[in-house]
Structures are given as structure tokens and as C-alpha cells.
Image 1 (cartoon, rainbow, N blue to C red):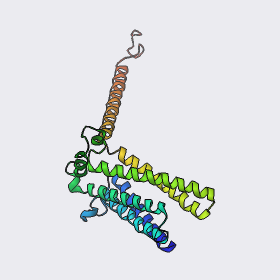
Image 2 (image 1 turned 180 degrees about the vertical axis):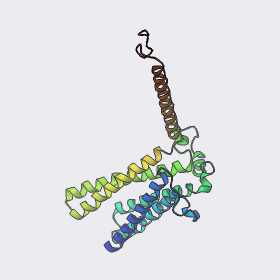
Image 3 (image 1 turned 180 degrees about the horizontal axis):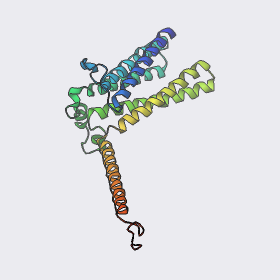
Image 4 (image 1 turned 90 degrees about the vertical axis):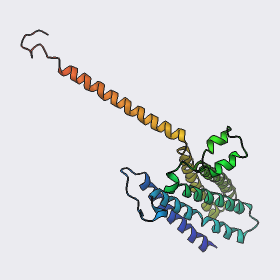
Length: 238
């Protein structure tokens, strides 16, 4: 049991690490060429990173199935399995949204139309579930939040019971889930069109303000340079 689960955890860590490097390359300035530009499924670093995250999350499902096989009556294992499935589906959806053929068009709204068929379009659902990318992002946030909350409760339980091995497992798991929760919230917040428009507006306002400041400084320097001192003109008069 432990050998299999830890081997899969190592695989997850390797895939997540490489995927993180790909994402850093995708947002780095100046822009770097993709690592695998000729392979369609990895044609951008963003797409490569999403595939690695998806493939890295999938092994969590068999890990939880192994735990359930040895302890089928443990409800927390079944909940963890459900959360792993939800997060894997969310990452797979985000990966599909990253394909160049999808990004050239407007954001897909397949799930959006399904949700709005049952809910009012004018409600808050229409804003927070504006496209499939946002829907999958929110699936990530909810899954990570529930997992973080449950992991924290289990850690407190084993602290009271004082089980060193379980404390170690749930403490490291809680740190991981907090990082995942922060990352998923950050990704979701940056995916709103209003957030992007606000950032663009603030950046534009900042550039305009800087340009006005530079123009004012240049005018003042020009005016100062045109004023001669009384001694410079040889008359002693201004």
C-alpha cells in the first residue's frame, strides 16, 4: 500500500514541478518560444503546463482507491476520491480551453448554456459562470476549499489523538491544499473580463500619468534653460 501510493505521489510531484516551470515560461517576459512548438498538444507552454497538471492530478484517483480498498468504511477516503475526480475533470476542462484553436475563438460556453438553461441568465450565475473556463476555475476553487477544510479537521483530530504518522501526512497535505487553494483563487480572479479590463485601464492610466509627468518636467526644464541670468547677458539687468 505505502510503496504504491508514495510512488504515485513522487510521479505527481515531478509532473507538477515540470508543469509549473512551463507556466512560468508562458508568462515570462520577454516571451520565450514554446518548448515543443511542433507538437500540437504541447504547442504552447501554457497548454503543456495544463496537460502536466491534469496528468499529475489523475494519479490521485488510484491513490484514494488503494486507501479505500484497505479501509472501505472510511468516509474521508470516499470524500477525498470525489474531490480528486472533480479537480481532475476541472483541470481537463481547463486544458481543452487552452488549445490554440479554442483561444482564437471566443471562450467556449457549452457548460454555460447548460447552466443557464436551468438558471436565470440575469442572476449572479450568469456573471460567475460566463464561460467554460470560469466554470472549471470555480470547480477548482470549490474542490480545493472543501479539501483544505476537511484536511484541517482531520489534522486537528489526529493532533488530539496524537498519531505522529497521521499528523505528518495531514500536516503536509494541509500545506499543499492551502497552496492549491490560493493558486486556484488567483487563477479564477484573473480570469474575469472585468478584472482584465480594470488591469488594462489602470495600466493605461499609469502610462498616461507618467507621460504627462515627463512632459511637464521637460517643459519646466525648457523654460528654465531659456531664462538668462543678469550676469550672463552682460547688462546686469534681467
